[in-house]
Amino acid sequence: MATATVDDRRFTRKEYEQLVEQGFFHPEERIELVDGVIYEMTPQSSFHSTGVLLTQSALQPLYKLGFHIRLQMPLALGLDSEPEPDLAVVPGGLRNYVDAHPSTAVLVLEVADSSLLYDRKKASLYARAEVAEYWLLNLVDWCLEVYRNPKDGAYTSRTVLREGDSVSPLSRPEAAILVASLLPRK
Image (tube, rainbow, N blue to C red):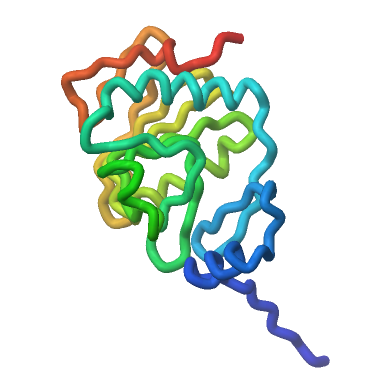
């Protein structure tokens, strides 16, 4: 009996960007490249969108100079990944990324409801890219998971914060943000 080998087709970031530029994907299609695989992202609920906007509102005053906040825009991470996190705080100004997406961030945040398991898996992607801090606003368990200290492709620190707690970004340790201010009201 003959056997067949079946391999996944993995894409490089360059191939993926060429497909995007050539119009291979529908303009309104929400996709991202993670570890060479193109994922279709589920539509956002208003609950999820509110979490994204609340987080942006809380972080915006902290990152006025020398940084800017990108909402659901690509990060060029390595040769085979271009995720579109819900929020990324990147160095520089808006015009610094006219020719290429940023390749680093000081803070990445994902808001997770139906995407919780997938967003937890993405922690290793951000750790491999040496993003110092990854926040997961977990709307399932109603908490903020804070991942820090990337080493060898994994975060060595994970802290779970609840509504009554506060968090300070590593890049703005003087600031304190109430976790309750990030969570959309039920």
